[in-house]
Image (cartoon, rainbow, N blue to C red; front, side, top):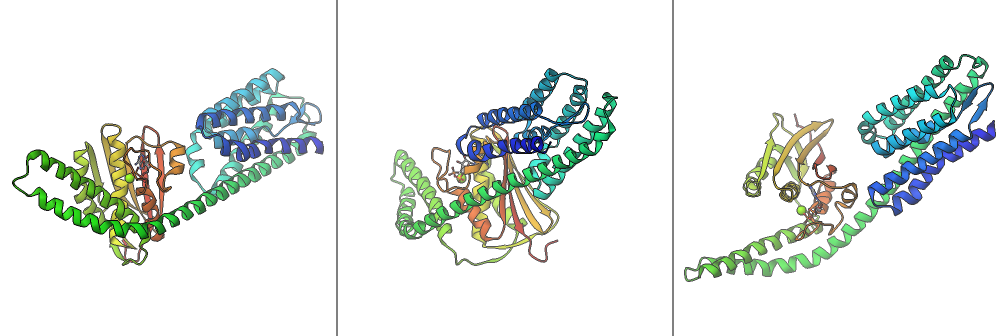
Length: 419
Ligand code: ADP
Ligand code: MG
């Protein structure tokens, strides 16, 4: 029996290893990822069910519920439906009276897991493990109880073994979730280190170039402005001058992004978030209206203070709102909601748009230097924003769905005196 149990435990580790060594690294298409995950989990489920642990008369037990549950928890809807169908079909093929238990308990648990999947994805490791333990315990207890109902001649002598195996299942699931989250966290840290390294190099480069370019630009801009006021200029030439001025402004804003990467010795002060948002509202409202975008600002009744550099903080808000406007522009029309919230000891600024949104792959690349999907994009805006918020000891969280929209949340530690 020990041999059989060990075999099951080893087999169900396979999808985990396969996920980290192959699927995550080599397959970038999300549909292919889901398909392969569903296939691997289904094969493992079938193997588990083919070589179960046999306990006394009529009693068999296996660990199929682990790859099955994890396929739903980490794979989502389609993977979950596929593995549930495979599991039930194979159980039907095996035959026997025990299959009714499976047909009742597994689909019910699957529906619960799918309905609560959003919760599982968002919570931290401890809650994930608690959730896994709770659902798998329910699943196993229901299976064992119903088995005794449907199979009247099942011996009660095997009950202690069932209980022991149930414990083993829950324990293995626990380890599995822990290992998976641990490796994911490790990969995230690795990416973060790479990102910081790149930003550092860009920053160094920026320091040397940006300043040198800004001065001649200011001169050119001044002369162009003078030229544009010349009454002898034909309307055609005036048009050329205005385009040149626009382009110089664009170049200036790019340089501004580069400079804020390099500058570290900036003036830090106490900022009233509502005031800063109001300032931004005034400066972007016209720009948004011009692009067919409805901009809603929700001003809170309470005052929240954070610590940081005013110019840089405004730059973050501008960069993110500008991205939202551009995301909506690519779609046609839409709206942006800017909210200020207070969560625990943090101030949260949400910038939510219903623009084109991003796929999980695009989300992963967000914030990398020079990553842009726009024709005239620089790929600096989000990177600079991430860096500024990081320097304010906060963080930026992003939720996005392709075709639906994006929500950026800026989380910042609150200063005393906030109410
Ligand atoms: P840029 O705006 O110059 O392209 P950013 O660093 O500001 O550079 O943004 C990088 C990329 O991230 C954009 O090209 C776009 O694909 C994506 N992105 C950023 N914000 C959003 C958003 N609100 N909705 C959709 N895509 C976004
Ligand atoms: Mg941008």
